[in-house]
Image (cartoon, rainbow, N blue to C red; front, side, top):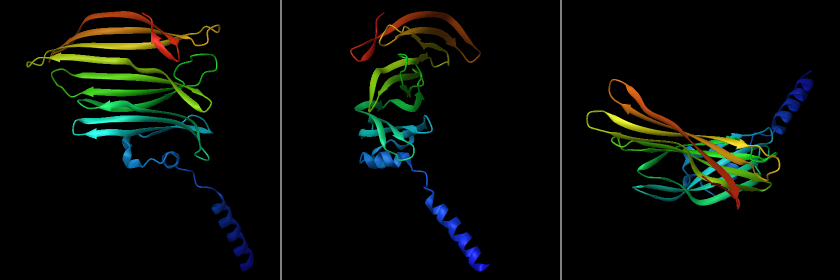
Amino acid sequence: MKIIYALIFFIITSNSYAQKEPINLIDSVLNDLKINKTECLTKFILEQKISNYESIILIPRIAEKDEEGMILDAILTIVDNETGKIESEFSKKECWYSDAIRLANIQIIYNPYLIYRFSETIGILVTYYGSSRVYPYTSTELTLFERQEKSINRILIDYPIYTSNGDNDINGKGLYEEHYKFIRPEVDYKMEFYDLIITELIIKTENSHIAEKIIEKFENKEILKYENGEYKSVL
């Protein structure tokens, strides 16, 4: 009987060792690219699973840093979930900054817009905050990428989809202007890349300690067309 128990224990133990531990995808990418984690802005190293087979890894590498702020290189990869192998990659020096206008957040959005029938896109949203209480400032910028086999191509660069500017006086009264941009692909199967139709909503408000009052609200239209590898405005 003891022999049977020992045999069962051996089989269970062997099976547990045979099962591979999940790989740390971020560490795997850093090792492959020979980047030390201390070289990066670690709070914004991001991992996002996009299927059972692949994940996106974003690495903001510090290019320059001083008392006034920093400049970041961007490394964007799609990796195999099981092996950690890099399947597709984009890298660019000096993509983002953080100074008096502070880099507050980075977010990944997968397949946010269809740019042609079978496109695979990645959006990176970068949010900045201004430090002034008298002239507050916030912005969120979209950089859009298209995946093409082993390459990830940047096709829209630092496009502001939200901005807010303020002007406050010493009595706590302020004027604010906000811009919201909504993106809609214009599907046309005859085109290599669809146009992106932009609706911009602009809201001007007057703030006080008592209430907020909208003093003006209107819309603008804009079209982004794909030309020479990049989307550009054709107002």
